[in-house]
Image 1 (cartoon, rainbow, N blue to C red):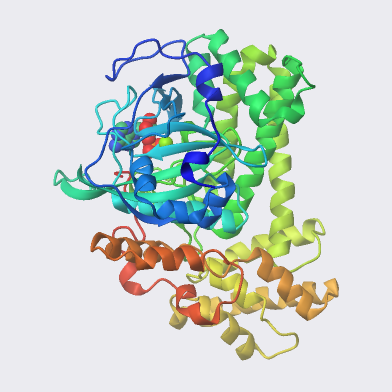
Image 2: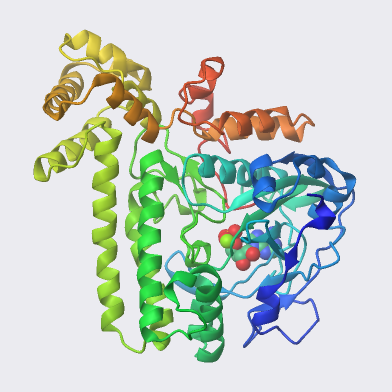
Length: 530
Ligand code: AMP
Ligand code: MG
């Protein structure tokens, strides 16, 4: 359908309390879920990329994305007649500390599209100008971080990982001043706007803010709205939520959060800023900032330079941070549940949910039919130690493992794994022995599994992606886009549509990170400045 034919609704605006003050200045906003605010127009909006799949979710013809009108709407210069734009009010814990009110400081929601299947999708522009939540910042986003958000949202979706989606990437034609290295040398960078799409962008922090202020009334309104629209299965028709409903809802958020993080661990994704304002109440990966993909396996790795000291949000800490964040949410929902104990019980389920899913996914990555208790725990533990013996590419290792033949000599086995090593010359003596010990233990376990070779290989390929948005690939696409050539954005978008497939023409995109990218900004380290 055409852009003008989209069926729009504004349930968030209609059903939740608004900030009565129309003034667009940074301030504290009480007893309201949102403030009405229009995007600030930009100089010359121009579409750089769009996702056909996300357009299809909305029921929108892809050809519509290439019209002038589309660039005007998704660059923030025009509204469709039914749109009632707003910025949401939320708070959050940042790096372990309560940060007070945060809110959509540069995200502006345009309303909800009801697609032909009756599904509701909220449209949100990121980088569309100041809002009452901007706290002195400019409300804008730069091209580099917008390219990263656009590509990664879609890549995660194609990997089968719950995520917010991206419809479009629009260059604004305006410059944005950013101090990328926080070294007092700000530069003008090209600005851009991504249109994100999700059933809702509500975060743990939306509930935390009302609870923190003792505003039970608004807390309940938002909880009821969320349950009504996004968790209707928890509610009998026309019923009002009870303390049991809120508890069942929390239990479901626990389940979804654990599931999302297991997926991240499966593919080597590091979110980078797991503050509670960046945790979706729907269990979606949200807010792609200084995220990164593990290249060499290292549980302590974080792409976020702001977190380089504490490594709070490093790869290996993500599961426990998920739990820490859920504890914050449980505290916020306590006034609705009315008791602490059942929330604590629900929290206990997190570790159980996570461990079960993690065990399942790790044996699947190894091509085994099921997890057989303690001996498999030992094998998986030993694998992590083995991967740390020499820098080993997390993605290439599992793809190589699928090709490991039975009953071959040591040299052949090592040759198959060697493309995953960053420093093959290190693989001697104890390192070599350590790797071989594990490979033999693995082959022994695998032979007991008695699975047909071709079937096992296919099953491994279905959970171990070959193509991910390697940090240096995203940076190459950005460097080119900043010079006016957006072809690599479309090329990567296309590549990442089939992350599990062998794509013979695209072998080079499955290559290890080149040495030059080890220390280049944007390739292995990212700042929060975006
Ligand atoms: P983040 O760390 O990106 O999740 O952002 C934390 C908070 O800062 C959120 O409330 C954002 O909306 C806000 N924020 C980040 N960058 C900007 C910006 N350029 N202008 C206004 N608000 C911003
Ligand atoms: Mg955020």
